[in-house]
Length: 284
Length: 310
Picture (cartoon, rainbow over the protein chains, first blue to last red):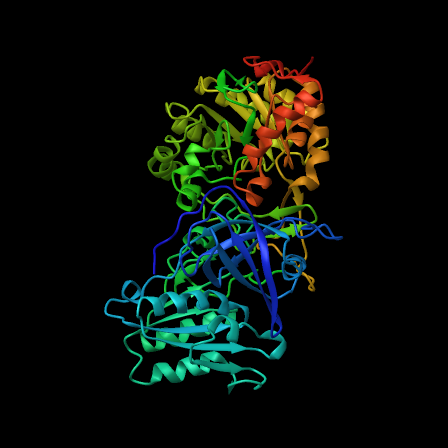
């Protein structure tokens, strides 16, 4: 695992090389010709090169996406992004066809830290993902495996329509699933699985890494605090720029005031924020 | 030095493309992009985010709302306060390869005076921009909406510093040129416009205001025609330079503002979409001016604000 990777300031035009359905989501891929290898947890600001403004005049701003995978491809690097079409920006990105252009800026933001940096003495990792938030945990899983860090992966989805990426992004791992409608794995929340795991006595030396909807992240915060387990959360907040310019992505700090999620996050320590229930997260 | 070099209020600039205050944080951008940012710095002068005498946390989220061809922001001027700015930010901003313009805002003439006193004498600061889109706590009136308030503020601040004073005008008035004339009379060296247009949004699918602070300001290409009209009217009313802004995204947009009477332009919301947007605007502007048969003589004092037909 690596520290924050610095991005070239120029926006880069990439070619879309794939777009496949996975459950109710899609995974689209583009080749970044010259950018650096991202760290797990970092994100890119994405804009379709054509038809970025639909009939209603939106989308206008780029959309922030955590990278789910980054693998060498030719001279460049193939970047995979997991998308659920919920609004004009995500609908356009979900419709990208092979050969289309995609503008991107990145990698941006603060990545996940190795377990030993999150909590002294921690050696293992528990990855907790919910919905579309499984994306950054996919690249984190690979980087942790590369570094030989023992890990367990818990993923939860609402229902079949609101699920995807498990086989494509987590294929070779033993993943424990939860679903709110019971179609796969534990019938309930992924945080139920986390609570059981942390109640066991083998989890004390692990760090929790989580990404998902605000309510899930708040539950992870509570459960981890109850068990004295350190956690890092990859959060979302509406952002216009992604590099600290607009001050739009304010997340309240435990000590008062706000952080800018784009430069001080999107990965934050669970105890440094006041709440994961940030107003405006998930705006379409 | 390109053919776009200008002199703005006595400050030599390599080209006429600045940033709008609050639309680019050069210090945060260094964290994201490293030192290569300084080698490719897209603006010919850097306008800081507005500072106030005391630190401000800013407004509760949500702070943003995307609109057709634009966005509403309700940020609330988060900043470290005058002392924090001077201690932490000024040394960082002084390393930029371009002149620094510090934007300041107070809620009274005394607060403005404190800010002008605090940064006006610093060698790192080339000029001050006065953000007057705020209420005067004594009168309850928005300074920038009132020619008399604007004149009175300038009469207080003008004798305090030899640095150029740029007055940032609000578009939320019936006649911005009346305020511009007052700023000119009070001794301002330039005006910049437009600030954002007052705007609000309702929560999608709901009935209550979306923004944490209730309302905010609209920016982006959606407001460009409004900005062009106001720049045109203001430039015709005063003889000090006008820095035009409002939805500038291309060299053609910038040329429109220069044709409307602006001596320089600022890129704002476009920075959010592409950190190097202003570099592209500058490159496109050169070709755009020549395609339109408009000259931009190097060394022409920006004060003239004039484009000459060639």
